[in-house]
Image 1 (cartoon, helix red, strand yellow):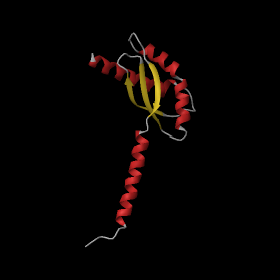
Image 2: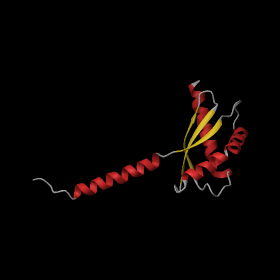
Image 3: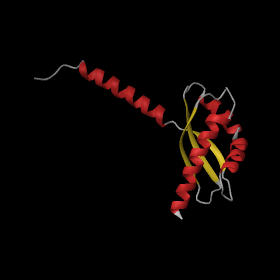
Image 4: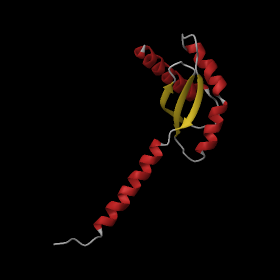
Amino acid sequence: MADRHKRIQALISRNVADIVQFEIKKESIGLVSVNEVVVYDDLSQANVFVSFLDPRGAHNKLEELQRTEGFVRTSLAKKLDIYKVPRIRFFLDEAMEKARKLDEALAREEEQLKHLPKDE
C-alpha cells in the first residue's frame, strides 16, 4: 500500500509541475517551481509546495496560482488513471528563502570574525 501511495504521489508531483509550467497561461504568476507534493493517505488532498523564480510579490502570485486549482485538478484528472483525484492546495515553500538568509547571516559572521584581533 505504501508503494502505491508513493507512486501516486510521484505521478501527481510530476504532472502538477507540468501543468503549472506549461498549461497555465497567466503572466502574473511568472515562473513557478514545484518543490514538493504531499498527498494525504486517503487521496483527498495534495499539498503542493512551490517557489517562484522572482520572489517579489510571492504571496500575490500564490493567490493567483490558488485560483487555478480547479483547472489544475481537471487537467490532472485527464492525465491520471486513478479513481479519486485529490483537491490541490498550493503553499509557498520558503525553504530557499530561509537558506539564503542563513547564508547571508553566516557570511556576515565570518566577515566580523576576520576583523577580530587574534590572540597569540
